[in-house]
Length: 109
Image (tube, rainbow, N blue to C red):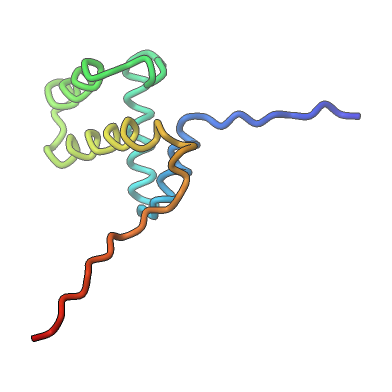
């Protein structure tokens, strides 16, 4: 009998799953995963759970000052990191697709 292989999902794979469950564009998914990968590599492959606001600030400052990225590019990186820390950290608990809020229908006059 062969040994049973366990598949460990990486943080980026988990993030892809959450992005798909929230019905975001495939291009958004690619961009967000790319920014998170760059963020991790910038901090010498430290796990995002070990990092906080100061590391995010350092990465975004590096993008603005050393790489001189455009404001929209800077905002894209910020949004990817916000998504990582706000939504992807609660992967198991939030495995449902987002629903739109329903507004009550006002009575016609």
